[in-house]
Image 1 (tube, rainbow, N blue to C red):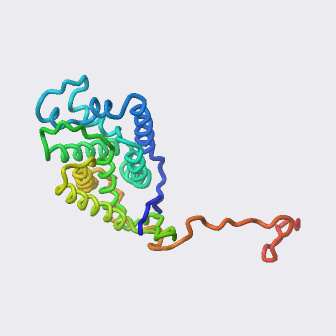
Image 2: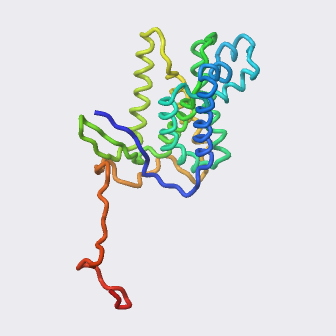
Image 3: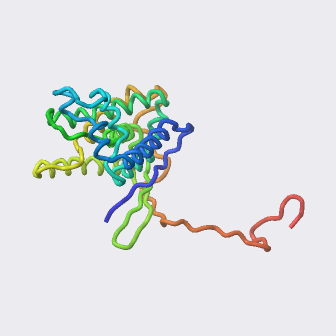
Amino acid sequence: MFFFPLRDDNNHNIRPIITYIIFALCVVVFFWQLSIGINLTARVFGMTPLFIFGDSSPLPLPAWMTIISSLFLHGGFLHLAGNMLYLWIFADNVEACMGWAKFIMFYILCGVAAALTQAGVNLTSEIPLIGASGAIAGVLGAYLLLYPRANVRCVVGFFIFFKMVRVPAFLVLGVWIVLQFYALGQLSDASGGGVAYLAHIGGFVAGMVLIPFFKSPDVRLFSPAHSRAFEVSPIVARTHIPHIGKRPDNQSRNPWGEG
């Protein structure tokens, strides 16, 4: 059994410009990485703990700036796609609750907190850290406090059977954070890993800590849901096909008597 989130039932009345810009930047930068080499861009623009806390960086970009530049780099298509999916589902509501200017600061601070959390485990590591995962984890942490009962439309599958189910955000995000701790525990018994799970956890916690200070005063935490939880529907909804040439019996004539 698995579930795959698609979108939330949580409308807002603004256009989330910064969310769109971050999404577009990450995609454009990824194709730029492909054109000159992902490993090369990671080495030059990724955050390397050794250069932040120890030796001076031999690279042209100041070490502190790589904390920011690393937020827009990705190591592969699946890395990018997973991050952009969660950004697309959850970031618009978080941006709406604080405005675009504060959202820029919030996103960067969560990314910085995530990067420093991961780097703090091994200050002399020469492995560059890249990806928007930590900053997006901060968005998820904020969303959990803002809209824990909002429903997320998920494709739920069991063998060959698939349905669309509205799942409360606290369950979707709860599963996500449990998986991060589980993966972290698995890595502690392994020789290494390519995913910075500590960065995810650090970003998530940062988002939860920062959101009370960044949200607008009129936005409250723990907002109610706008749809019913655990409603089940087909993946592809039935399409209504209108009658052609003949009016249904239960349809009244228009006020002018034309038919």
